[in-house]
Image 1 (tube, rainbow, N blue to C red):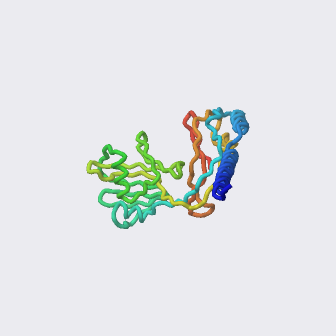
Image 2 (cartoon, rainbow, N blue to C red):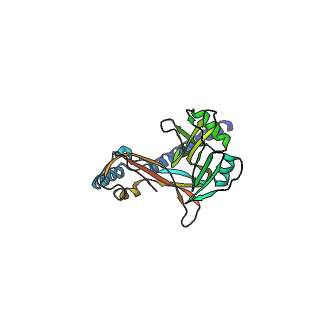
Image 3 (cartoon, rainbow, N blue to C red):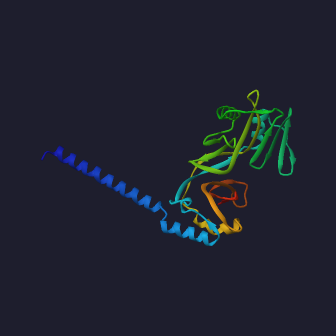
Length: 252
């Protein structure tokens, strides 16, 4: 047998072995990420015993692995320069900071802000809103627009940042006349969390939702919090649970 034929056979065997090993690893990983059906069934029974009706299909059947981004927010100085072109002096009102110029007003309260002018808003398309917000200097990377609610929602890695929103209006001249927002600036941190599931939060349902209820929706996302004892913001894996009667809560 020629050496070239032997090399071809050996190469083919190595390729087959590599495919087999990779396939075995993928199957193993998928199996380890899948939540056993018996665990889901037990969770449904536990909720029922606590006064909650929950379709098993609403509970995730896989453990989640998610990147955890770094988060910060626009400062009053940044926002003043965005809206007024310069750094204005702010007045305090409780926990809020307020700046005014030529009939326009900017209120900053923690990570939320509101800007409004005296102009009347008109109907505007998502495309026009995005264009004006980008010109203003607000990043819409990962943002999705909801026409029904007329707000932008923030996403990272396909998962929503719960309780983050931006609602903007344009006037007849096509300029921004109002913004209400709790809108973050995100960047990759290199950190990740794995094995995420909602089961550890199930015992708290009865504490949060008195008298039980029917679970309508369970959604995974990120929730904002402050690092213990500091003013440093961070995002944590979280779950928004909504009941049929409209009650909702973010478990984190």
